[in-house]
Length: 287
Image 1 (spheres, rainbow, N blue to C red):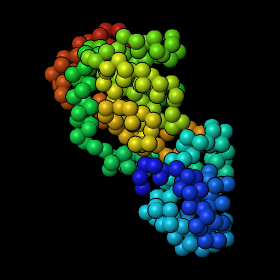
Image 2 (tube, one colour; image 1 turned 120 degrees about the vertical axis):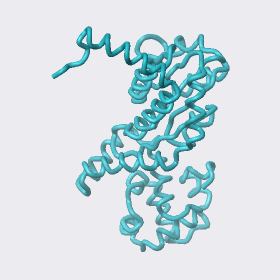
Image 3 (cartoon, rainbow, N blue to C red; image 1 turned 60 degrees about the vertical axis):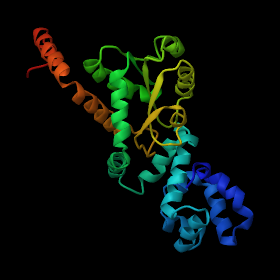
């Protein structure tokens, strides 16, 4: 499915007058209940609309989706940005009675990691690692829930690189921390649904300053993907009001290891010195 066709509402509205009676029933239900339909099987959706499962599958084909699973995925992508936190939480409550919540959440995280691994572009990963190593300074920008990822990445890159800065939203205005970034620097921007507008606007500013932009986000439809030189993708399906950062964290671990493998000797010496300091000041418990 092409990018311009990703908004299922636009597809339905454009083709509605040519639908059969059954197709119009499906379309009406999806438009009015897209948050529920996104998590229904074709069979379950057919029960709610009052038509057969095969008709649901044919409806997906009529919209040029490659089967019902792709239509369902389009609905799930839609609710990532359209659902408020309250609506996400209500959705969790509604479906928690129908399935084992613990299993559902953990299975979703496992699936996100698996899909991230399967779709990973190793050439892009290698190029990203090289750009970071060659940069004069590295800035890491992640706001709201993505701030956790930014801090984690910054913590470990500081062991490997000499000049790493994590942009702190709570200290002063974000833009003030970015104003001196130039073409010798690399910015790693992280953003996942619901995407932070300030992250997007900050990256637009940074592009004008000539620095290289590397983004870590969830899909090619993310606002950051179209304005970054290189992008690494990590899946994060919606299962609750919580933003699942398990797959993004796994991808960041991979990036850190990829960079560290190119700086083995330096890193070995760094950790040798640090171990002496940690032992002298009892940084870690020995019990």
